Length: 123
Length: 110
Image (cartoon, rainbow over all chains, first blue to last red; front, side, top):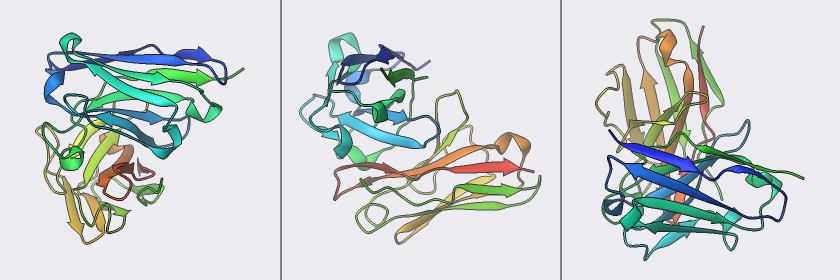
């Protein structure tokens, strides 16, 4: 059974940092583009970032460019999101989700999702 | 980052048919496949329709997807109470080099 389990969420002050992790099991993460998708309270889903299988390509939504960094460790079957300079509008549930197995990144949707981890940015 | 346009809500009575629309542009829906996700509060979103029209195993054939030009639709026939959920369309945007979602449609079964 495929499982994606996010961790690392919590309460952080504006301007602070947080690192999210996503651990995969029953699933060979190295074969997939991987994504982070978030949902702010009362809002819809918003794609945040994705990363190619070997880490050589990364894409971000404009609102997080320069503040968030997506990375992966295929040996550990894990995905990460380093979030710096956090703002109130970053408050959301963050989901990791699998993507395409080949290029381009838009060639397949988000087949597997984790349950999400809540990030709250507040003083 | 511009997203796709969906109606915020849709509704129907059990047994009825409902269609949820998703409107985009030439750089997103017009150039790439559309995906639909079903989302129940407190749970992980579910991969529901892929490549415009295809259903993963386990999704009832009461659900069907279509795409024409820069728009897509999710049609539900024989509405059932368990279909109540939020539905999102999504596709890759070539101009933005990123995924875009619709705002989501809350489906209510009256």
